[in-house]
Length: 200
Image (cartoon, rainbow, N blue to C red):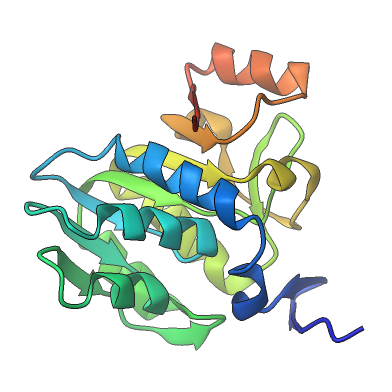
């Protein structure tokens, strides 16, 4: 009762404001661990999502960093900071800019690293989203980056979105907070040389 949610395709996802209060300590740990992967002088993409926002908070005071994002909250975190921020255009969906305008903007830029959010994980296959609008944006983020990292709180390994947007072989790493329980998934990640980074 009193649960705020919005319809996205076939699944119901809690609205951004509610998600932002969930797993807060875990997201901060993941954000700090992901920030350690970012070097001075990097140009990076930060996806929309509350864990991605935690990464932005950890990067806010970097002196030599350029960030491309489709997230209104991520852009807001960097407002007034030394970080150079480029916000793509597009239609607003759940605090994220999506549609062809966003995809074309991202396609025009090659970056060092992309940090991607996900609704869930599909077995040993890859990352999923419930949003068809965000599907194409996330695909392009990975394609525009030399290295792609998924930021996943532990609960994502028990959730499944309907749209598979990335195979694990497309990723450089996964940043998460707890050991992955699925042994078959761990084996697949090792086979694909996907680095599993555990937030301390």
